[in-house]
Image (spheres, rainbow, N blue to C red):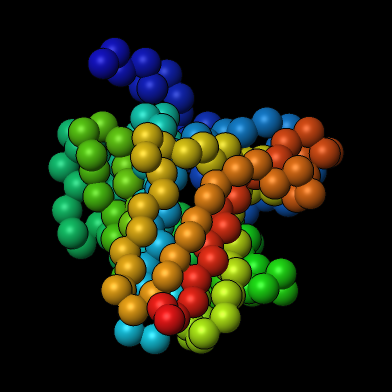
Length: 205
């Protein structure tokens, strides 16, 4: 792949990071970072446990993180780089609920923390993986949980990867899920609507 990214100096690279994580919404008019996301719906013995999230970033943002933040230019990312990435280019997303919108039986659930953050390279793309705890106990009647990942400020554009939704469940539950555009959750001046996954589950009879 041509390394045209070298045309960007450190000031431009720093601006891109700021646009994603630091600057107020009115600064940005279009996406600066592009992310393909996948969500694994995870059940434990009690019911819904949460969501395993995978984000694959575009090549430009990957170069920004590697060359500007980590100061490496040969894709030689090491495990010891992960805490730095988490601190400088992920933890700030707590203020934005990690770009994850969840409702439980139509009531908002605020994502305040995540677990098991990891960062790695897949070819020439940076990948984040993290788990979003959302414990909802299964009972004999249906419970409904909705989850969507998007950036309402549109600093970054989150789009589904191939086969974006998967399910890990236990045999004692009856589970249904569907994914469709939620027209009621418009953002970016009402021009965009997120894809949202609805999960319905209960104990098997």
